[in-house]
Length: 124
Image (cartoon, rainbow, N blue to C red):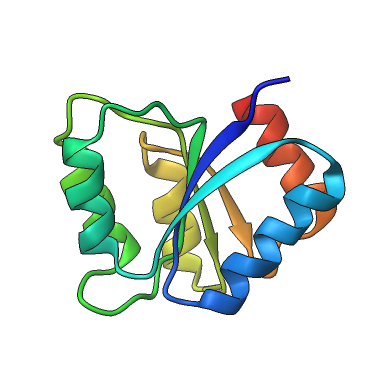
């Protein structure tokens, strides 16, 4: 079985570690590239030749938020499935996520094993 390749874009280091533990607990081989800064993730994605199975994206981050990330990423030629993982329960964020053509899903933090299995099924 080949590794699933994930990019996590979230300024919460603890949350990133917790997500990795969930994937490990499920027992699927994985490789995660973490970005605490979404602008660094955009620079990486603009230059990389690598393929990724999906991106986990937070909304509330410094410098640029998840929505600004999506606006910039939407102009990229090469795209990977994006799932929003956030602590925001703002109805406007939920509505915006449902309307976004770039998002494959919207999940409330913290992710659970069931949520992670759902994400892996959508993207696998």
